[in-house]
Length: 394
Image 1 (cartoon, one colour):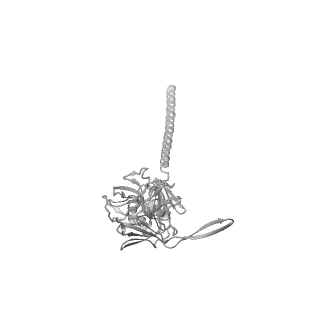
Image 2 (image 1 turned 45 degrees about the horizontal axis):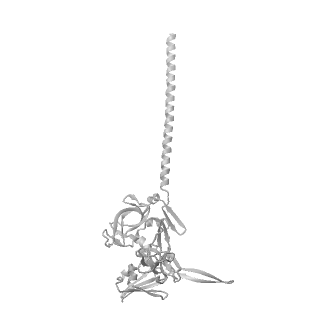
Image 3 (image 1 turned 90 degrees about the vertical axis):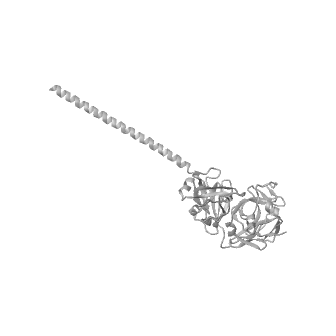
């Protein structure tokens, strides 16, 4: 009997030991599982941080007076997206596209800072310093020339959307065009003038123009003679945007323009300035305006043997020959005043200089030679306070 009791006690001790071993195994497994979960959590956090850093660089800055907003690509893609067809037709008539683009309507971005109203314009500047100014009508109504895939002029059934695109056929834009590019998007397979498209857009600025009233700015000029100082105040007046400021004539064909009319046309941008008789160089500055050829074509264009009579509001009158108009045959100089040959120079009637409208002391319009190069021309060939252009027969 004692032997049986002894055997029973030994079995109880063995079972107890087995229970201890089992509990220890379970505790060890639990510890191992906690370690594995912690490692996974750390890895996930690190990956998320890397992704966040990659999408934070600012690619676009929008300015409206004292208000400024910045956007990364990721933030732009979070805004309401637009999709459409777009492409370009260059000056030689070559068509590129249409392609399928994705982006954001320019108005969506402008509305983040209060939007724009009639009389305002928007200046877009690229990372290479190229800039372009769009009028209210262009942005809101898509007032641009439109072409089909063959380059023929067409009238779209739906106005194009002025957009900042970041995606071409599902791929992000490369560094030669993006990361953000301004373009026109259509519901049909149409393209627009290449000059409308602005690559590598970096800054957007809302400009306030004066369309309903006359704004006066007082400029004080102080001169010192011996111990006496005199001050002279002059007044620079902005002409209302609805007032006729230019008349283009060809015989019985007459076309009048106000500032709103000119801003609604296809605009051009380039560098220009003057070299005086003493060799003094002013500029080059960045001008925005309308191609002279576009204005002449509205009244039938200029033909061989004809010339242009150009008149300013100050009574100054000069004449450009057919060769000067069609071949842009003018002297051009670099910033030091040395003679240079400009790359594809063109004549333009300009209304904006360095992002601001010109006042009545020099404008509201001027006529001169612009180029993508930083060039200037003879001051005698740059017409200030432009009033009228007339095509004259021989």
